[in-house]
Image (cartoon, rainbow, N blue to C red; front, side, top):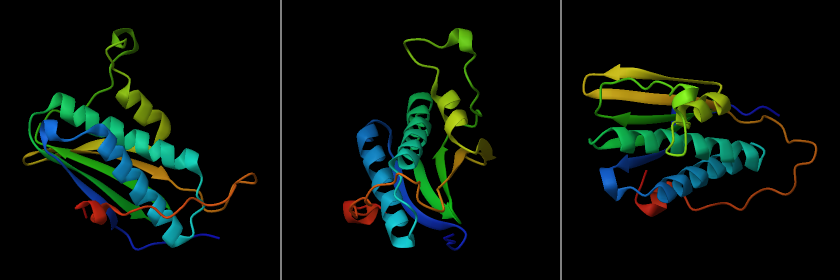
Amino acid sequence: MTTTVPAGTTLCRFPLAGGAVVAADVRRAVREAVVSFAVRNGVPAEAGVFDDIVLVSSELVVNALRHTTSPGELRLAALGLSIVVEVDDGDARLPAKVPAERRGARGGYGLQVVEELAQSWGAVPRPCGKTVYARLVLPDRPAPDAGPGLALPRRCAAQGRT
């Protein structure tokens, strides 16, 4: 079974207002939005794929919070069976992977993780900063060992986010 949704269906918007944002809140909102989308659209609930989307979202948000001081926004959108994660921030500098020899206990792995998990990623300059995005693909049929589906989560809107 293949599910198709209208292009650009927004699943969640989450404002990033500097220190007020807690990474755990972002991860919870992303997981709830993606699982809710999957349940509503008959997409198999394979936790590994959801974990990838949550991790990529978290890495992009943490990078924006760590390297910029301006408020931004996280957006999740569905394009067919792809989930697109977008993070806006006010810094015009485009992200670059940290060379392997400079990674360590203090970090430097974020974009490497994004590159490994996402089908594609990149950054687009904007008049007031940039948008960093990643696209991940959801499965279109259950894995042979898939267990029961996940419970329907609360939606982002129920937490004051749309």
